[in-house]
Length: 170
Image 1 (tube, rainbow, N blue to C red):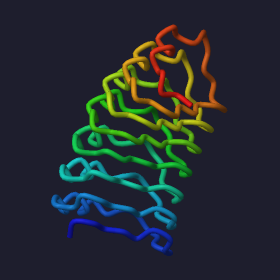
Image 2 (image 1 turned 180 degrees about the vertical axis):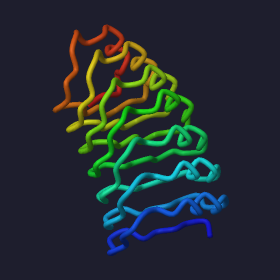
Image 3 (image 1 turned 90 degrees about the vertical axis):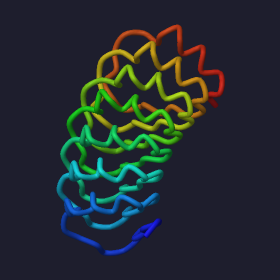
Image 4 (image 1 turned 45 degrees about the vertical axis):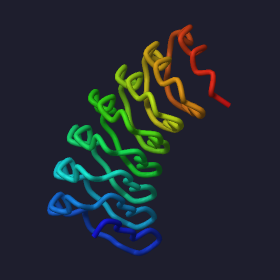
């Protein structure tokens, strides 16, 4: 199996830890189901994964730190769930990432400074969460960023001057 797509079904229960055994899978879409529970840390074993869509389920807990092991990941979206915790600090290891979608959750903490390492990031949506603190100046390193939607959070401080480096924003 190289692609695994189950979008728009009625799959329930949890994502089994054994999913990590699917090391050859490059694309996985489990969006728009009724999956619940936490994302198993074994997902970090799926090192060939390039796209991972888990939107519109009932997933909760923190995004596992093991996700940062998926260095081939280009698209990651977990919008519209019940995710909490903070964004993993090691998220910046995902240097191939073009899409990072985490909006409509309960994610707290701050935006990791490592996001500036994501030189290929084009879209980052984190609105409708509980993010706080300052927008990191390192965001300016994500120079291809075309969309950055962060409304309905609890950010403070001022916009960093490095935001001016994001000339692809629209």
